[in-house]
Image (tube, rainbow, N blue to C red; front, side):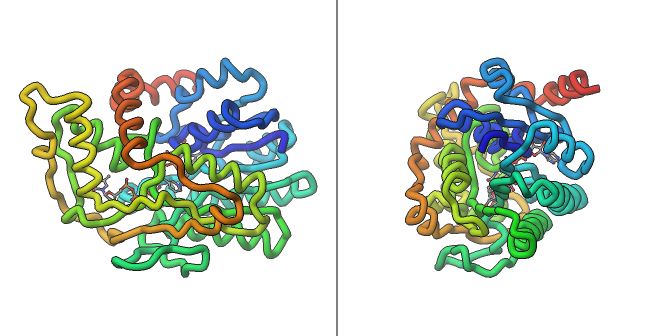
Length: 349
Ligand code: NAD
Ligand code: DAU
């Protein structure tokens, strides 16, 4: 791989992936990051990378659904590998306004695949980053394996499932060299504060209510974002073409336990002035419609085939995450106030 097209590189996981590939691997080629900068895309996440890596890092503002923009990027940069993150990613938003999810996650992926097919003579790999939510919901027993049936329950997961099927079909029908990864819930630096963990950290710091859906008994399998990015890179280097790999943290927690841990850690690191527990801020609110009860990943395939396993424990990962948000008040302020969106408008008008 010499010229990797990363889509959605200004979002949470894409940012960490771009940083990882350029800073922490022996990759010596170029990363071309294509992102259309929705509310979730923040190019400021990578300004230091832009200065440090010069021509080895390029950013292009473009929609993955725009055929001519994407085709000209394939031509201009001689793209030989794709790592496809770009998506609408938040389940609650998909319930309120599903349109963008269909457009980006399904039609955008289709457009990328079509262009990749046109350039398949030089394409080594199209890696599609997907989610465990395509498998639906588990009750208290069992795990999702690569052979679990697809049973998506939200417009978000249905759109990701459709994209997975398209990617797989391009392997079967056209022989496009693809891999797919289905990962559990990520957390870590740069995550947009609409998702559970950063929302709870920032609300708790501001003494705002911590809204827990339903009774807080839904279970998620948490994975530190660095571990996810390392898994994707292993798949890109050595994964079997046409294969799917499940990635998970072996770290199941009920939401209420996750939120309690955040409160307790914050109380240790930065106690409130009256020393009271931030657990007081927890408020049980109306449940998410169609709320999946439990996700849990069986990741033995990637462990056995590619030698990957999660390195970060939830205790250390959560502490690192909390400290990152505490150490980056400027990032938090610009994201919460929407200042970064104004900057984007100025830069790209
Ligand atoms: P995110 O919402 O933080 O980032 C998405 C990025 O995609 C943003 O930078 C956004 O601007 C960009 N984007 C959106 N629509 C676009 C379009 N039409 N054209 C170009 N760029 C566009 O998402 P994330 O949490 O970083 O997730 C990245 C990928 O990983 C997604 O495909 C998601 O489904 C998958 N995933 C996420 C998790 C998780 O826990 N966050 C877990 C498993 C899989
Ligand atoms: O499993 C992988 C998926 O994880 C990814 O594909 C998605 O892109 C990502 O957003 C995430 O989906 P979830 O819906 O699991 O994540 P979220 O952070 O929105 O919610 C985590 C759990 O916390 C879920 O059970 C809903 C609950 N929740 C969430 C929010 C935002 C609350 O109780 N209160 C909240 O305010």
